[in-house]
Image (cartoon, rainbow, N blue to C red; front, top):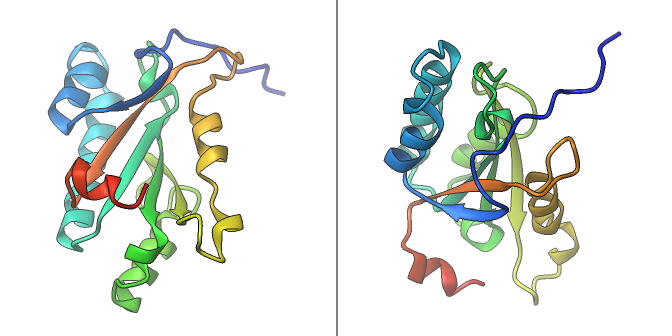
Length: 167
């Protein structure tokens, strides 16, 4: 039987941290020069980002887990694909299925990426009750030891200004 997970120091203070891939790589890969797994995991994250960009999707990736701690050899990168439902509704159904089938729980896209999906809804959207933004914000913002920690937000497909139109 496994004991409780070991808590490692977080790399970021509590809250959302919107950064780019280069800054993220410096934070979570470059500073761990002896790590074998971190560069491999980050390469898989970069592949996912390239695939989502190629699909012309507007989304955020909320990244968390032991990859954002001082743990030298994390098991995987935990991330949530977050998109506004009204934007995702306009995506071709075949592309929607690719995203849902490969990112909705587990390691289907890559054994090194533990992925989830969070569709976000406007207040007036009748599907609003299905919005799990608060759940994921709380999940990613607290460590296994119940201490507050930060998580990374990678924005894809649109500028900050464009995303604020839906907030």
